[in-house]
Image (cartoon, rainbow, N blue to C red; front, top):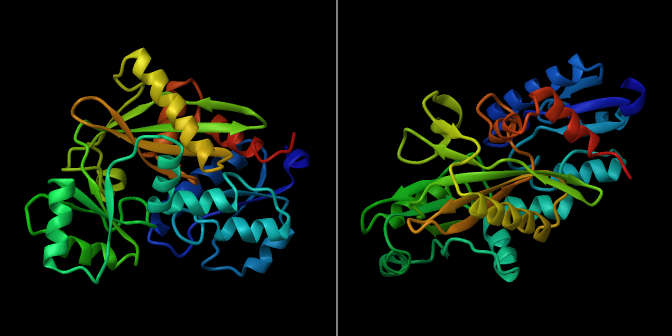
Length: 309
């Protein structure tokens, strides 16, 4: 294994709002690689100079959020000529931007929740108009954050302006999005060299009001149903759509495409995660386990996708 992959760097931590989660993901990945004889080493770009990456042969990206999942780190690795896990620069940047990824999916004919861009230039009447157009409840979110950082659920009329102010603390690009109340789900994809595998779908049932940061990482009462309780026909339709969403963004390697159902059971694609979590609460390992793939096997599958044909 050491000969095949050389010196592998596991990128973790970083400086984004998702640093703590990234450290957990990275530790899990590092432990799995070392247990399988890989010459793997941790690397925190918030603590070490990027020039030190030049000594590595391959990179496993366990960074989440900005400067790790948005194409910036992928560009550094491209410049250094180091093969890395996950999609490339363009796909990573597009997927990190929820507004622009929605535009791509809409152009490809894929269903997405109705949404509006918000602006600090809007007055109370303009915010009220968005509430009327999208209906309540609705969600307000920073367009380029992950792990539900900065997301606010607006339940009552007149609440959108304050929700915008909260989300705008995290990003200058803020979306208001129609709430889809039929459940939250995800589809994990492994792919490369013309072959793709969509893992069993996962349904997420948080004990909190919605799947926020606390429900994702701090609580033990969030339920994950995998395979998701959907018909075989609907499962196949959504898996095909998730793969189309992945391909429309130009993704490669592994990715997770989140989607929602409305109360009529129709699905809508929400966002793509190009460096998904690998913690004990994370969705891709849950989906892999349901398909008979252990955590260690999943880590190796992802690493193998960095190899050329």
